[in-house]
Image 1: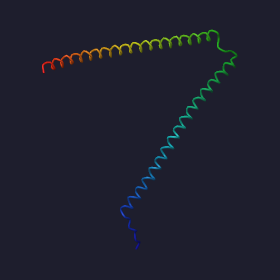
Image 2: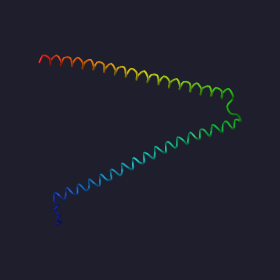
Image 3: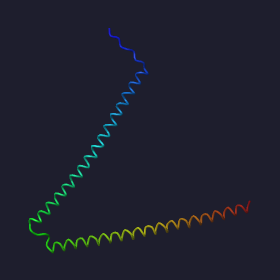
Image 4: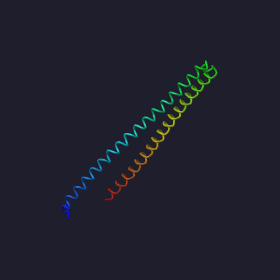
Amino acid sequence: MVTIPHITQNMFYIVLAAIAVVGLIMLIIQFRIVRNSTKKVNALSKEAELKKLQLVEIDMKSFQIMGGKGLSKNENGWLNLKKINRSNLMSKIGHFNNEIDYRVDHLESTREYLKIQNRIKDLDRRKDEFEEKGKNV
């Protein structure tokens, strides 16, 4: 008959621990590989989008050249007017944001001032109470 070597319990735990450590190492390596590959895929997709945009721009330029004309004066003026309106709108939005921030800061500071005033009144009231108790004792 075949004899099976006797493995002690400690040796069994050591073998299990070694298998678990090797498994963890393999798992960590796989996670790193997957993370790196997703980063590469994301970078490649962004590059592909940029290439598409460049191709569209080149196509638009070649279409204008082949047509023998650029934008007409009316279209060019209309684009300039849109740019000016957009810049004016953005400056107004910035002004409103600054004004809102200023008002919020002002309200917060007045609220904090009122809280401090109430605390001072409360401390004065408590001081008077303690002084009265001190005189009575």
